Every structure is written in structure tokens, then in C-alpha cells.
Image (tube, rainbow over all chains, first blue to last red; front, side, top):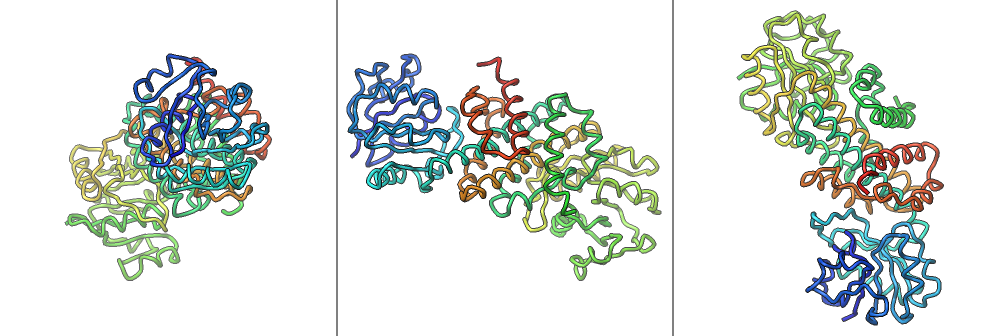
Length: 253
Length: 253
């Protein structure tokens, strides 16, 4: 059984804590956060601390914190024996250059506190500074997920950008879709099957081949009739994405 | 048993033809298209024609054609007895002003020929020019789908724009995500669970509440590090969607 100190109390930390509570080989023995208030949900389940001086020695220090908090924690951590890991898509493993045992444990999923996640299907992208540490990381990742990928720091950075496109930006388009429905007295649930199908389709065909819609068809009449229905922010988004689709697909028509 | 002449051979027509082949109360008795070649896939399954003069009388004329072809067909149709319907999200029911029996049958889903669709879960938005015709439309829609909504022409136009946001534009963002992966030797499948979860999440919470990512967190360092990884088209999209997310959520931080 290997011990873990978990740093952070946000969405990623919260879901990782849950996932490891079912692991046979790894156990979270402490949760750290600088704010006592955010530790509240963990109280009674696991020892918690907001003081660096009280952090337990452990096999693994797992930093599930905001990217810009990683550097500060690194500068304060006193236990060079632990394998230190972060969960960030954007921070290179080199942030741990002064540590003997270091790596990255990046779960590629969107987490919200109110929505449970089946970690078995969450891809975990791992990277380590030595072969031996990579083996520990593989065990750690395999203990909660069936989808473990070895991804370098530079690949991970690009993967993170791609994730912003296919998740954060996509969710923002859902938000605009909901706003348009609400403004017109239409239940947003009418769009749920379309949203689900659009997402599921690209598991059996390339999204490039799955493109449909007025921009793809170069249907200028429909495009022109859509614009007056939108606010100025929505118009900007509509125009740039329409022209991007036309640029990509225009030559094929 | 009511008879249908289906106009069109594109993705929507193709899937509607399939769906009605299982209906007990409605039967497609003929498929029309101006091009003989596009009628090929229907040959042997149903009578086909490319000539207006050969179109059968029928209870329902169902126009599953491009928006700009609707007007031309309307001007040529000789049978004022039939209930005439189109499947467009953008064209008002008033396009049929010279017909006694008219309506709209708009299946709100994205269709590709190579991907089968369970019509039972496809929302169908209906509208008719009389109460009696609305009843026929309800029967027609209920015969293939469990999700039938009465939606006015002006609502449908807005719904169509919303669908462009949550499906066509979303699919384009998937396309960019795939391009970024390919450029960096990353299998796009790593992003499938994230895409699925992002889509499924908004069935249990509002997308506004589900927003995550660097723009939402106002994490300028990550945002700045992403931009150099993108081509100029991707940068434009990244910047406009990041600033939209910041505008929407900025005041809440």
C-alpha cells in the first residue's frame, strides 16, 4: 500500500480523492489546502491541514492545484523522498527539476463537484523523470483508470489546448444555444439529443467528415437570415466559425 | 394507411425513408429527385422519379430538400389535395401560403448517411396551417418519434440557429481538436471521453454552471501559453471564445 498526500480541494482533487478511496494499492492519508474553509468537505474522512509544517511524509505528493500554485508549493515542500506529481495539462514536468522523483498525472476530463465521474473511463496522461518513477505512475493510474497514456510535456501542452477546444469552448457554445432557446421560449432539452449525437458521431467517423449545416453547404441565404437573430457577441462567433468552416470545406464543394 | 411522396435524396430524406419503412400508418410510395443518379440508392425499394409530371397523388408530400429548392418545388406541384410539408429549420410555413394543407416537419438532429439514427429519440418540431392538419402532423411525427414538439415558425428559426451553435459549430471545434492532436502525434481518441462527458453533463446541469477551463478561471498565463501552439485561424477562434467566456463569467469571479 502506497501513501498519498493530496494537495488541493478543487474539482480535480475532490474526484481524485473519491477515486482513490476505492483503490487497493494507494491510499490518500492527508489533504492539504491553504484555506481551512475549503478543507471542510474532507473533514472526518481523512486528516487535513492548512500548514506546510504539518504535512505528513508519504510515498506520493499529488498536487491537484491551480497551475500558478504549483510553483509555490514546490518551493515549500521539504520531503525529497516522495514522488511529486501534478495534474496540470499545461505545466511541464520540468517544474519539478529539483526533485529526484517527479512526474505528471493528468486526468483528461472535465470535473464538476455535483456530477459524479466514472474514473475507469477517464484517460490519464502520465509522464515521469525516470523509468522507475514511470512504473509507479503506471500503477497509480491503472489503479483508478483503464485508459492510461504516456504523453510527453510538449504533447500534453497541445493536448490541453485541444481539450479547451473540444470541451471548454464547446460548453460555451452550449451556453449560447441555451441562451437563444430561453430568449425564445423554447425548452433547451429539445437540443439534448442533437448535442449527444454530435458528440457520439465523432467516435465512429472523423469530425471533418461529420460536418453538416449551412456553412458547410455554403447556404448564404440561411446564414444571412440567422445573423439578425443574434446579439453582437453571438454574431461575432457565428461569423468567425462560419467562415472557418467555409475555408476548410469550401474547396471540396 | 396514409401515403407519402418523399422529395429529396440527401441525408435527411435517406433517414426519414428508413424511419417510415417501420411505420404502420404511413408509407412512402415514391421518391422524387431531379437527378437520376441520386435516386440510385432507392431503386428497387420504392418507385422513384425525376419528372414532376410523374409524381403520384398522395396524402402527404414531404419535402426533405435543400432550403433553396423548396420554392421551386412549390411552384411546380400540381396536387393541392396533399398535405405539403418541409423539413427545414429555417423556412417559415408561409412558403406554402397557396396550399390549403401545409405544415412543417423539422427533425432536429444531425444526419450522416453512414451513421444510423434511432428516430425514436429524434425531436420532431411540427407546425401546421390548421388544427386538422396539425393532428395529421402529430400522428405522422408520433409514428416515428417519441419526442414531438409544437414549435412556431419564428421559434423554429431561432431553434435552428441554436442548433448551428450546439452542433455544426461544436463539430467544427472537434475538427480543430483533431487537427491539433494529429499535428502532435496524439491519438484523437484520448479526447473521446472528455467530449462525451462535456455533452452529457449539460443534461443534468445548465451549461453555464458547467463551464470550466482557463478562460473561466481567468488563467492568463495558460491562455498566453496556448496561443503560440495554434495556427492563425485557431488563434482567432481561441481569442474570441476566451473573451466571450470571460465576459460572461468574469463578474462572478
